[in-house]
Structures are given as C-alpha cells and as structure tokens.
Length: 265
Image (cartoon, rainbow, N blue to C red):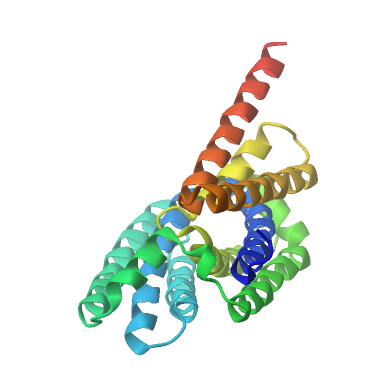
C-alpha cells in the first residue's frame, strides 16, 4: 500500500488533518458551533467553485470565503438571535456566488464531486505541504490562546465577568475554524467535513471530564477513523469518506454506550 506515492500523501495529509480536527473539535463542541461548522463547509464549497473559476488551487478559494464569512459573523453577531440571522443571510449570499461561478466554469463536474465528497488520493506532495503549514498555524494559535479559549468555552458565565475582549476571541476562533474547515474539505469533502470536526470530540466527551484528556482522545479517534478509512478504501475500492463516517459513528455509539453503563453504576 505504501509503495504508492498517492497513498503516502493521503496518510500524511489525513493524519495532519485528523490531529488538527481532533484538537479544535473539542472547542467547537464546547462552544456549540456545530451548526456554523456545517455552514462554513457550504461556504467553502462556494469558495472552491470561485477558485476553480479563476483556475487556482481550490484551497485558496476555501480560505478566502470561509475566513470572510467567519469575520463577518464574529463581528456582527454578538447576540445569539442576530448570529443565526447573519449566518442565514451570508450563507445564502455565498451559495449564490458559488452557483454563479459553477455556471461559468465548463469543467466544473469533476471539481464539484471532489469538493463535495473529498478526494484524498489525489492530494499531491505540494498539497500536503500546504495542509501541514495551515494545520501548524491553527494548532500553534490554539496553544497560544489555550487558557483563554478553555476559560471562555467551558466556563462562559465566569468569563463574562473578566475584562477580556470576547469579540476578539470569538472572531479569532471562527477564523481558526474556517482554516480548519478549508484544510479538512479536501480529505472528506464539504458535505461531511463536520464528521472529523465534531464526532471524535463528541465521543471523547463521554469518556473523560478532563479537557486535556478529551483533546488527546478526540485526536486519537480522528486518527483511527482516517487510518482505518484509508486502509479499507485501498483494499475495497469504496470511498474513503464512507469508511471514515462509519468508523467515527461506531466509535461515537460505543462511547455513548460506555458512558450510559458508567452512569448507571
């Protein structure tokens, strides 16, 4: 399996993304941002369509559109009801742009399938390098602001009593999330990218109350999903995305079952 360059690139890129997604996913769940993660993936699809229209790397379009959306939502939506309205309005706007760019691009079919469902086996060495740099940026920033993010995410009531700029933290995290989504889409696709960003972290929450252990377990579950998914896809020729989704779902229900038994006892 590892005699092929495309499989080596797939495992490298998949592992990098799994570590990053498992890390940031814990904060996504704690901050109740699963919905906006799903929304940003659709916005990312529009950004990729924009990049295809310009003839550049789809990842650049993903970054431009998702970061723009994150900044707008973070800046305009301090209150929950305003956030939902802002997200809906901006989602409609960006999806409209995406449909426009797709209609103007004659060779869009293959790219659309790749963006929607992922194409990890087509990732090149250059793509791996870009994914590595962006993932390191996200992880480094999470470490840099770890204590503040941990405080705001897991104890928002007490955090409000501090003088820390919550809007800045909110915008920063949304931008980090947009980068994470942009990096994840090539692996698992825009439609299912929230699997890696939310399911491993959700599973980890059933197994421990320690945030640090939660992050480690979430990363482990994400890695297991990616590694097993790639291996099974290689030997069966079925989509990688299918296997990753099934594996993470099984892990989630096993974690839930374990939690239920522990709670009863």
